[in-house]
Length: 297
Image (cartoon, rainbow, N blue to C red; front, side, top):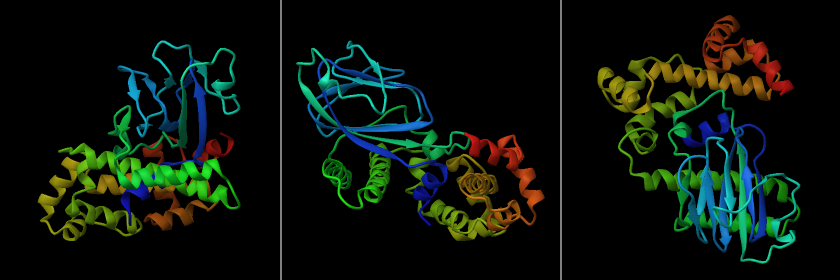
């Protein structure tokens, strides 16, 4: 089981979107706070990212920025440029009267996450992930996505969805590779000892795992494993197991009409009543109410 893919699949909602855009100075676009996460790649020219907090960030050709937490931010030709609110059907700024300055080309992607169920893998990311285009795999994903957006053909809808997912995976891979962190999930993904236990949890959430069983997967004593897991992952082994089961339950309630008893069996709860109790403790609402809320959202 690929833990990174697994977590992103469970937390993401809806379909990601992608587009190419051309702007000509003066221009500025404000992206309001939302459940979404934005990713932008500068294909030509230069511009500025204006985060909700912190100093403006100058972007050059090949730079990639990922804004993961749904905070508002803006892109502009200059930090002092006027900003217009982002709209899907807004015409490019290059069409605006008076736009006679340097032009830029951007590749933009948007992802949507269930913010009611956070994961430290995403929570620990900074407000802005800023990468250069020097990572070969990330560069290849950008080139493929840009090409497909420029020349859509039969099957483009399915291809674009896969390529946008690929872009996010390579952004996160590159960030974790560059981070050289000494704690948190940047180290978990590179720790084969802890990953062995996480593969067990993610691959078989219905199994009645014990700390001793998970420790045996990792090749550590029970006490050494429990301390290492808790210190690094941020939850006890069984606390993480429960959290992951609740995340899967929320996903199934959102995406399917499966009865609660079937969901309970899939994630390791003997009865729907046991699942309902655990779910309400985690989310603050009963599973049925959670499902109704998501269906009408």
